[in-house]
Length: 386
Ligand code: SF4
Ligand code: SF4
Image (cartoon, rainbow, N blue to C red; front, side, top):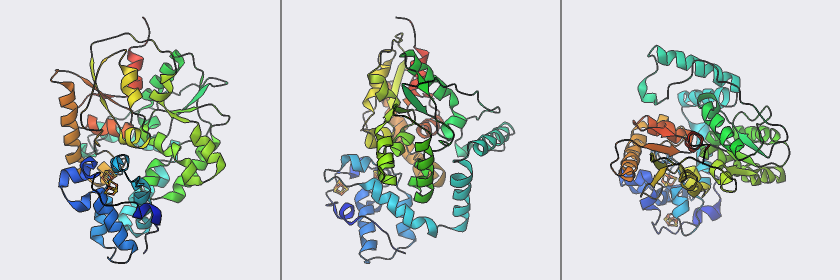
């Protein structure tokens, strides 16, 4: 088996190590092979045929959370995210039968099919009520009933992207986002049929064929040229990368319409009622390191809350899409650091809320006992009067 990596991206790393303090898995393990520099060196050794592609290599690649904090910190512009995605794509066919079966169910049967995902959600919700779903899965309490349908406005000024898991499990967050967007006098549309999943998790897992198919469906579901507002950091990062994924002019034009929810709000008029509730903002990696769009979250909440930010340069929380399921121990160790940084930012107040703009991070942090809400829900709660 060969790794098909972009030579220019691979040799861009000069081994300076400036990325190491930003890497959550290096911070937790202290091991070079768990760092971006170590992982790139291992990729290079395989490409140059100086080392075998063995189980240690696969383990080192799988232990990466794909948070891309290293990319944001790298002075040489190393595109680590692409290198890791291409490596995962090469490794995908070599996975064990069991892992491939689990991935098939998740990536092919559930995520791209809204109805199947809805049915599985209801079945899991019943399992939760019967205490048949282990707590270590870290799932939030799932709804027993199908969530109420969202309504779209005609001739929209903007669309709201709804996606898969977030729409099935956290539709109230979309409802809050719609209400906040409409409070700025925007008419908000919803995608046509087909935009069931953006393919972000598929790209992470190296399943490019699936991701390309899903991206094509998503693009067709947003006619016109209105902005596409995204209230999930991970989905937003994936939609912004469609130009590279599909390499077509239509995909590039689509990506140019994509904007994060809090960033879109910056140019709108929104009136909030102030409160003294302390809100600690958690920066999802795909908002901070990939989209570079984390600052509007805190800025938007300040009119309604006592907003605090963490002093950890946006260190990852360890959720990483499906990472917490496949790497539970590392994921928990990384989360413990994040929880400590969040508590420190809260400054000792007895009760506080964490704002997270990514559903995966929100669930992962809530499973550690924090009260986590989406910025849209926090804004909705303070909407209204002067
Ligand atoms: S990835 Fe960038 S920051 Fe990290 S060692 Fe390589 S060149 Fe330096
Ligand atoms: S993507 Fe994140 S976990 Fe992976 S090497 Fe870079 S900083 Fe470390």
